[in-house]
Length: 322
Image (spheres, one colour):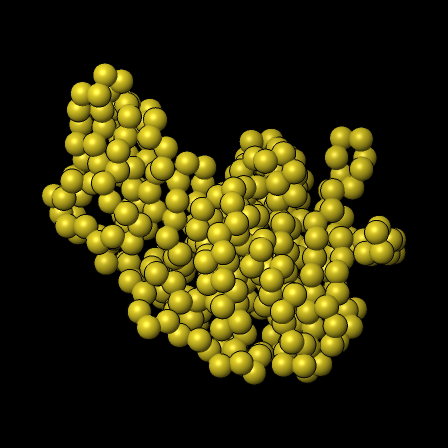
């Protein structure tokens, strides 16, 4: 049964055959209810071409502070030319509605939604929410582009996480025109991993920094979406290629502080570093050097901390190994 809210229908599950062709449709999906029984509604956008084809899902704000991906999805649906589209594109501009509303990265019970996917049918608050996200929305897709950003106090390059043992995932990664592609088989608990377990080809797109809208990052993400549709023969535009080839990393890891203090990082995003190069200095509150951190091996800076106040065990840089 469909009811109305602000002229947008409320549904309980995404049933794509019921959506009309040749138009962009909007729905609210009632996923769970809050403590006084009010529905928590997830926004859904569906663009359906006149011709049949695959279904591509675009998701953003799995973490409540990741805004760039939301803007990528909004701009896609505002600019798509439906006469050029075959198949269906589903946009979920905000997956984690409760956390967005309170300005928090994690879900309201403290859990990271991108570590507990696909959730549980009969679990705690976050488990049920995650389960319904996957079963009522994600399971309907053939392909998934999951848009993320860095976390609090950190910044990211424009990079892709993908399982490079899959040729289609590798191709999807390259046509996003990223600065870096990281070989990252989907870890247990991620939305990308839950999608992969359902046979959905998926990649994670890291679109910059949290809590802000970055025009350049959003523009890059939007180009990647249109490139994806062209690559899948769902859209008649030509693929736009960057002049520079992305750096492909086989693995990556974070480097952490061993003590606490005031952290100064000496390297920038996408900077290639050499083994033994000074990457950061940690000073005490009096300004005296406590530790100097050197690159443990050759690599490239995928992301880094921007918070100078570093407790013991704070992140310094995310180092990709080519």
